[in-house]
Length: 110
Image (cartoon, rainbow, N blue to C red; front, top):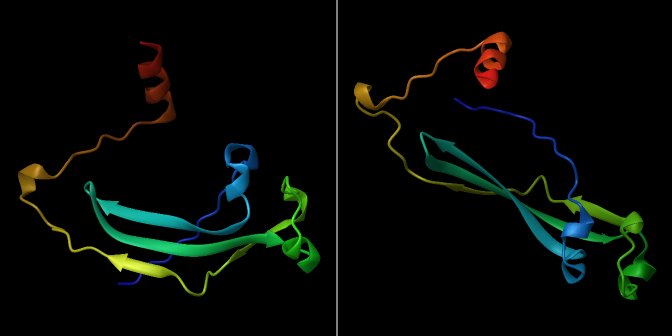
């Protein structure tokens, strides 16, 4: 059936982005995998532009990130689906062990 999730994250640190790439069109990709195989990729186009049309027409040499607005085309995602093998032989299914926070603390101290 259909699944829905909400993803929130901090905005990127502009200091880590080259100056020439701080404005303009870019994209965010969300990929989903099952047992190490990607089965869907969703991409969203993003336009980073100034909140003032005059600044967009004549941008300063050093981008003023306080005036930049991120426009996300959330209503027009690019979705790519990949066929994968969903079910495998029973002996290939990984097993997981449950831990309480106390168990993890004890293991970390060993």
